[in-house]
Amino acid sequence: MERRKKAVLIWASVIILVIGYGTWKVATKPKQAPPTSVATIHAQKGIPVTAEKARRGPWEHWISLYGTVESSKVVQISADRQEYVLAVLCDVGDLLSPGDAMAILDTREIKEKYEAQRAKVRELLDNYRRLQSLKKAGGASAQEVESALSAYLDGEAKLKELEIDLDRSKVSSPIEGIVMEKFVEPGDLASPGKVLFKVADLDSLEVHLVASPKDALKLANAHAARVNTPKGWIDASVKRVDPVADAQTGLLKVILEVPSESGLRPGETVEGQLKDENVAEAIYVPYEAIQRPDEGKAAVFVVSGDVAVQKEVVLGESFNGYVRIISGLDGDEKVVVRGSDRLYPNAKIWLQGE
Image (tube, rainbow, N blue to C red; front, side, top):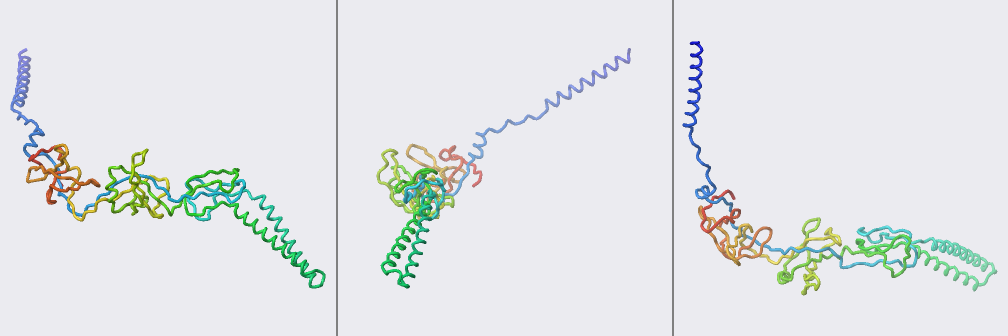
């Protein structure tokens, strides 16, 4: 019994020691400092921003417009004679070279007439030669020989006409172009004056752009033009800028001429640009750096030590993510780009990289 009491006392002592040690560890554990707030970091280091030096150099401004490719010359193609269409060899969108067959007319009747006339011409020639021989022998007069020759020549002329008719059985493209419209199917009756196809001349391509009337003055001062094609940007020339907006759309039309080797095709939608500014030396900054402190005003934040100084600026045109600064900067300043929307005049800044 005595031994049992001793064991109980020993275990109770161990438990008390363990609990006491745990309580001591908890009580003496160093307290963690609370996390630093964003406001504290900004107060200590400043507002994180990125900045870059204002750019100085040549400046171009292009007005971007959109429109479609068209041909100034569209040829209407008809058959030269009345006949049923045997086959149609092209479709809308097909590219054609001069002489390419577009449709074949039914020539069976013409062929029969041609073969009959050719046989008749052979007979007339044989008769002429026979009379020539008889004349030498005194069996035919000169008048008979002359009449036979005349009949033979008339027969030859009619045969040539039938040959031409056979050649005209093929409706061909007179130009290099693309089929824009088709109005015929096999079995239709073709006739002179009835349009079978419309083909756009690829040597007479234009780009018809549309523009807002508010850009009329800029368009009138355009120095150059270009069009975006499958081969990249190519130079174009301004053919015409309509002075009056379309009554239905309210938009101006701008016509550009493009070279035939542009790779463009009538009907395509394309982007065109007209250059209305070409400045030898200008100051420009990323558009992201521009702030609007008050209505009608613009400003940028310039890095000065560890603070951002706000400078009011006068803006020009913007292009490709940059905006021209007409006045307000010397061109040597470093302007805040990312993070400028969180700044206020003379705010402390923390540059993150350029």
